[in-house]
Amino acid sequence: MIEPFRICTIDHTTGGRLALCRLPGRAGDLAGDVEAIAGWRPALVLSLTEREEAAAYGAGALGDHLTSLGTRHLWFPIRDFGVPEAGDTHWPMLATELHGLLDRGEGLLLHCLGGKGRSGMIAMRLLVERGLAPVDALAQVRAARAGAVETAEQEAWASLIEA
Image 1 (tube, one colour):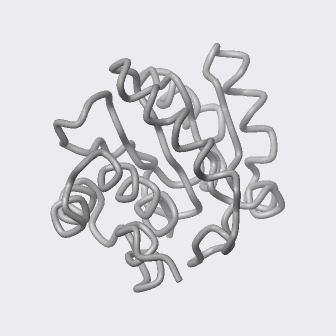
Image 2 (cartoon, one colour):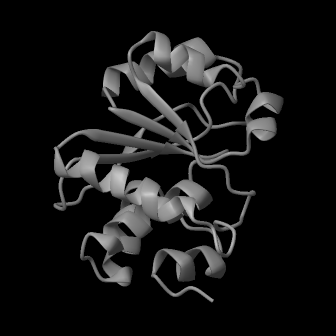
Protein backbone atom coordinates (compact mmCIF):
# COMPACT_ATOMS: atom_id res chain seq x y z
CA MET A 1 0.00 0.00 0.00
CA ILE A 2 1.26 3.45 -0.90
CA GLU A 3 1.35 5.98 1.91
CA PRO A 4 -0.90 9.06 1.64
CA PHE A 5 0.55 12.00 -0.24
CA ARG A 6 2.25 14.45 2.09
CA ILE A 7 4.75 17.23 1.75
CA CYS A 8 7.59 16.92 4.28
CA THR A 9 9.05 20.35 4.96
CA ILE A 10 12.64 20.41 6.18
CA ASP A 11 13.22 22.59 9.23
CA HIS A 12 16.38 24.53 8.38
CA THR A 13 17.67 28.08 8.69
CA THR A 14 19.57 28.46 5.42
CA GLY A 15 16.87 30.40 3.56
CA GLY A 16 13.70 29.61 1.67
CA ARG A 17 11.42 26.62 2.09
CA LEU A 18 12.61 23.15 1.16
CA ALA A 19 10.45 20.02 1.11
CA LEU A 20 10.23 16.44 -0.15
CA CYS A 21 7.35 14.32 -1.37
CA ARG A 22 6.72 11.08 -3.22
CA LEU A 23 5.79 11.07 -6.89
CA PRO A 24 2.52 12.99 -7.26
CA GLY A 25 -0.14 10.75 -8.75
CA ARG A 26 1.58 7.54 -7.70
CA ALA A 27 -1.52 6.41 -5.79
CA GLY A 28 -3.83 7.33 -8.68
CA ASP A 29 -4.87 10.85 -7.64
CA LEU A 30 -2.63 13.17 -9.64
CA ALA A 31 -5.15 16.04 -9.48
CA GLY A 32 -5.48 15.75 -5.70
CA ASP A 33 -1.72 15.60 -5.20
CA VAL A 34 -1.20 18.62 -7.46
CA GLU A 35 -3.85 20.48 -5.44
CA ALA A 36 -1.86 19.73 -2.26
CA ILE A 37 1.29 21.00 -3.97
CA ALA A 38 -0.50 24.20 -5.00
CA GLY A 39 -1.45 24.73 -1.36
CA TRP A 40 2.21 24.55 -0.34
CA ARG A 41 2.97 27.22 -2.99
CA PRO A 42 6.36 26.14 -4.33
CA ALA A 43 8.14 28.40 -6.78
CA LEU A 44 9.57 25.24 -8.36
CA VAL A 45 8.90 21.51 -8.32
CA LEU A 46 11.97 19.48 -9.24
CA SER A 47 11.25 15.97 -10.56
CA LEU A 48 14.10 13.55 -9.92
CA THR A 49 12.40 10.51 -11.41
CA GLU A 50 13.17 9.43 -14.93
CA ARG A 51 10.38 10.52 -17.31
CA GLU A 52 9.46 6.94 -18.21
CA GLU A 53 9.31 6.04 -14.52
CA ALA A 54 6.93 8.94 -13.80
CA ALA A 55 4.73 8.02 -16.78
CA ALA A 56 4.55 4.39 -15.65
CA TYR A 57 3.03 5.56 -12.36
CA GLY A 58 0.51 7.92 -13.96
CA ALA A 59 2.45 11.16 -13.56
CA GLY A 60 3.56 11.72 -17.14
CA ALA A 61 1.50 14.94 -17.31
CA LEU A 62 2.70 16.29 -13.97
CA GLY A 63 4.53 19.22 -15.57
CA ASP A 64 1.44 20.27 -17.50
CA HIS A 65 -0.70 20.19 -14.35
CA LEU A 66 1.81 22.25 -12.39
CA THR A 67 2.33 24.76 -15.18
CA SER A 68 -1.44 25.27 -15.48
CA LEU A 69 -1.38 26.39 -11.83
CA GLY A 70 1.53 28.76 -12.39
CA THR A 71 4.15 26.55 -10.75
CA ARG A 72 7.47 25.99 -12.52
CA HIS A 73 8.51 22.40 -13.09
CA LEU A 74 11.90 21.00 -14.07
CA TRP A 75 13.27 17.50 -14.61
CA PHE A 76 16.64 16.37 -13.26
CA PRO A 77 16.29 12.61 -13.81
CA ILE A 78 18.37 10.24 -11.71
CA ARG A 79 18.03 6.45 -11.77
CA ASP A 80 16.30 4.94 -8.73
CA PHE A 81 18.71 4.51 -5.79
CA GLY A 82 21.36 6.35 -7.84
CA VAL A 83 23.24 9.62 -7.95
CA PRO A 84 23.79 12.06 -10.82
CA GLU A 85 25.98 10.58 -13.53
CA ALA A 86 29.72 11.10 -13.08
CA GLY A 87 30.81 14.09 -15.09
CA ASP A 88 27.26 15.49 -15.28
CA THR A 89 27.53 19.18 -16.09
CA HIS A 90 23.89 20.01 -15.34
CA TRP A 91 24.09 19.95 -11.52
CA PRO A 92 26.27 23.07 -11.07
CA MET A 93 23.93 25.18 -13.22
CA LEU A 94 20.82 23.72 -11.62
CA ALA A 95 22.27 24.17 -8.13
CA THR A 96 22.91 27.84 -8.83
CA GLU A 97 19.27 28.27 -9.82
CA LEU A 98 18.01 26.35 -6.77
CA HIS A 99 20.20 28.32 -4.36
CA GLY A 100 18.98 31.56 -5.93
CA LEU A 101 15.41 30.48 -5.33
CA LEU A 102 16.14 29.65 -1.69
CA ASP A 103 18.10 32.89 -1.26
CA ARG A 104 14.96 34.78 -2.33
CA GLY A 105 12.95 32.96 0.36
CA GLU A 106 10.94 30.91 -2.14
CA GLY A 107 9.75 27.32 -1.87
CA LEU A 108 11.42 24.34 -3.54
CA LEU A 109 9.66 20.98 -3.63
CA LEU A 110 11.71 17.91 -4.55
CA HIS A 111 10.18 14.57 -5.47
CA CYS A 112 11.29 11.15 -6.58
CA LEU A 113 9.32 7.92 -6.59
CA GLY A 114 9.08 7.48 -2.81
CA GLY A 115 10.26 10.90 -1.66
CA LYS A 116 13.27 9.55 0.19
CA GLY A 117 16.37 8.53 -1.78
CA ARG A 118 16.92 10.90 -4.67
CA SER A 119 14.94 13.80 -3.23
CA GLY A 120 16.59 13.39 0.19
CA MET A 121 20.00 13.31 -1.47
CA ILE A 122 19.37 16.55 -3.38
CA ALA A 123 17.97 18.26 -0.27
CA MET A 124 20.99 17.16 1.74
CA ARG A 125 23.39 18.35 -0.98
CA LEU A 126 21.73 21.77 -1.08
CA LEU A 127 22.02 22.12 2.69
CA VAL A 128 25.69 21.08 2.61
CA GLU A 129 26.35 23.56 -0.18
CA ARG A 130 24.64 26.19 1.98
CA GLY A 131 27.12 25.59 4.79
CA LEU A 132 25.76 22.79 6.96
CA ALA A 133 28.00 19.94 8.01
CA PRO A 134 26.94 16.73 6.21
CA VAL A 135 25.91 15.04 9.46
CA ASP A 136 23.69 18.00 10.38
CA ALA A 137 22.20 18.25 6.88
CA LEU A 138 21.38 14.52 6.90
CA ALA A 139 19.79 14.80 10.35
CA GLN A 140 17.59 17.71 9.24
CA VAL A 141 16.46 15.90 6.09
CA ARG A 142 15.72 12.70 8.01
CA ALA A 143 13.85 14.61 10.72
CA ALA A 144 11.44 15.72 7.99
CA ARG A 145 11.35 12.41 6.10
CA ALA A 146 12.43 9.25 7.92
CA GLY A 147 14.59 7.03 5.74
CA ALA A 148 15.65 9.85 3.42
CA VAL A 149 18.98 9.37 1.60
CA GLU A 150 18.80 5.63 1.05
CA THR A 151 22.29 4.56 -0.03
CA ALA A 152 25.88 5.17 1.00
CA GLU A 153 26.53 6.41 -2.56
CA GLN A 154 23.75 9.00 -2.21
CA GLU A 155 25.08 10.15 1.17
CA ALA A 156 28.62 10.47 -0.20
CA TRP A 157 27.45 12.51 -3.23
CA ALA A 158 25.36 14.76 -1.00
CA SER A 159 28.34 15.21 1.35
CA LEU A 160 30.42 16.55 -1.56
CA ILE A 161 32.50 13.36 -1.58
CA GLU A 162 32.58 12.58 -5.30
CA ALA A 163 34.65 9.88 -6.94
